[in-house]
Length: 241
Ligand SMILES: [Zn+2]
Image (tube, rainbow, N blue to C red; front, side, top):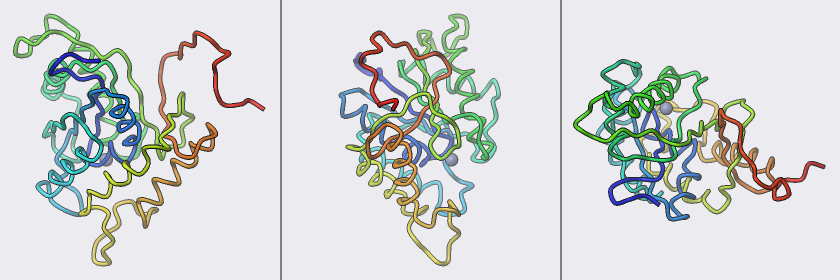
């Protein structure tokens, strides 16, 4: 467990609802385990077709409350124009050093939306800088997260691990429902996720697909770039035959 003011896990999204939709069940599960979890959104969502930055802030606070996040931070980068610049890396370095997370959850880098591609690159590079003593940033101690999970929900990527969120799916859907400006049906508005006329069905279907793979009901997939260490293969779950 973390010291006072520090956190155990940091979930990062480009936009305010990304974390909830892709890995909100896992976030909630960590909270239920007793870990201190924070959310970092890189942008305020001012370029979104629906809603405003102000409205999405209220919705984001609602969702963080539902999931039980310890805090939610916004880096204030320009929506739809996230760039991996030195200035932006240093903004992220400050957050990483302040919060000192062990676990970092990032979007998987190969994605359609440029912000979703730039976010993991920017944060990964910032984590490297955050560990360098000579990179100064308000006198904070150097820190690098110990482990990175890349969230692959809705992507056609074979996951390294799949986390059971059967007990957390309702809280996940409740958190996404906070984003009324994005997902409340309105015939006069564009549909944010065109294939998903109902975002909640979309989320449940994706979670069911991964739940099936580990013989549970709902789950979320992640890629880990390093090998996954196992001490006792006799305790490996999920039948092979
Ligand atoms: Zn997004």
